Length: 317
Image 1 (cartoon, rainbow, N blue to C red):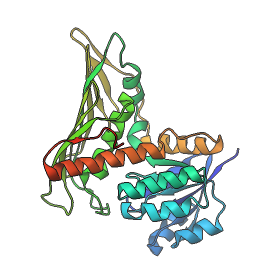
Image 2: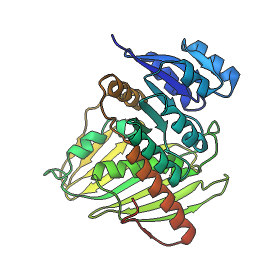
Image 3: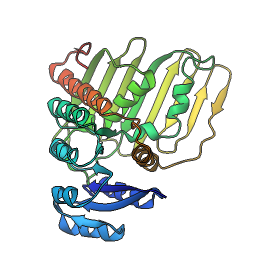
């Protein structure tokens, strides 16, 4: 069996899970990992039978890789991403794509110029139930989507590197999901934010106005318990999806339905898709453009919060 040769840059809070999954996939080979923390690099490499590096450029130069994953702090994505695209035709950057819109635009531009398949880590797209919801839009059981409500709350994860706030770190997933489900960009964004315990905003409420629907996102690092939930209201029914259990229900006036789903690890499905794209030379489901647009919307949400007024997005995305 042909295997995709993968390198992982950054093996901290989330990158170590990338390393584990690639080690477990039958059609992938975790060749090398790079981390500035030498002891961590050696530990993860020995655990998953990979070669450790403390210099990611050295790893890219020495190893023959089919794809590379960048799971480092957001402020490093631009520099590492540009370097990785010199060596690999498939580059996976964990969300958010970059620290600024300008950096994100350059990454997308260089990827297109160099014919690199750039994808962004929006794991929520690979949760069981998302495709079911989308496929039932405009059917007789659900009708036209009217309101999308996402709650992504819970205590702060202390392992994370704190270089972004809750909007770019967590709410950006729901920004992407709303775009994916509705297959359109929002026309306006309004947000309120605050910071009580952290350097950047640690609670936010975001309203996104689409052509015929409204999206509402609640995100924070303050709630004592973790909650990841999506509710979508349509003309004839309401979807409710628990991202953690992957339980999906659809309720109408006189009936209640629960989808038969078997729990699957979203990260494994996401990375399996990336490996399949490499081996079969396909476009990844999530494009660099998707990552850029989500980043722009997140930035405009922050701008809206600073100004205390809605931001029109037409022509800005």
